[in-house]
Image 1 (cartoon, rainbow, N blue to C red):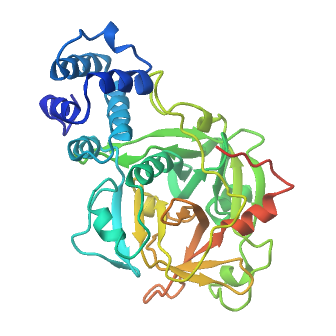
Image 2 (cartoon, rainbow, N blue to C red):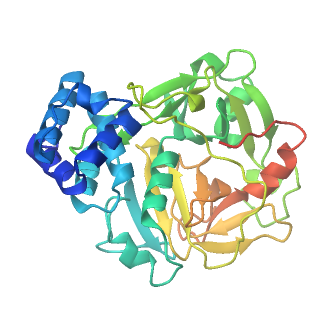
Length: 368
């Protein structure tokens, strides 16, 4: 089958979660496959067995596409979640409360125990929708690399547009690096057996890579961000164009693979209040993709709404990461931590509303 998952285990998960009709629908919706063409009519366990044998013959990408479809259809089924996690399709989770790691918290974002951790303090969440949105966002976040070295994180905001920080790409912007040696690496993650999926590296457009730029503030450059308020055009972002519209392309190799898509920059601002949860999808220290979630994350906005502070953990390489509320609504672009790194009190991002306000009129923003 694949590392970490036994054939019998996958078959039992299918039988536990689907009847014959739903198994047929699964194949049609997620693999664009007429199940009757490869599987004889019969008991569900027989159909599941033959479907898995067929997928195994096609190779790992089809097995992954099947597992992804199974999870999207039955995210609350325990056996299905275990298959999804063992195949390394669920990002690892660093769960925090007010910036402090929570002991014995779930390791994977698909863990059903998240309901017990989140629900007592927050509104009830439709876990199926939450997991589906999380999986979608995972494939839209990338690691930024200059000359083969990781420098930060970015995320798709259009078919071929990536948003990250100005300072992440500063060597390129100032002409000290080449766009031909700058790539955005998607799907870079740790699998359940400990191996690392290297993902896919997409280079920048040769000539039209620069779409829109906004520098950081002078006070931030001097390590004293509270000295003065940033101006409305000091938002530390870079909007860049890739060589290919990867957001419009499927993630897997089968005809039923989901489109990668992109994260929509919302027209209306999400409510921001102290004590709100805040999640950051990131590549800390250039590592495979991680999720940090703090249910008491938001500290507050600055006086002119150009900066948002929060307690959710980040590290070097997290600059350019998307920040979300608990409903996966984009809130901010992470850009720096407290300069008092020995005893930090906050991390900081650019409210996405401030970025959108500057972009409107300069760039065509598309919804997914």
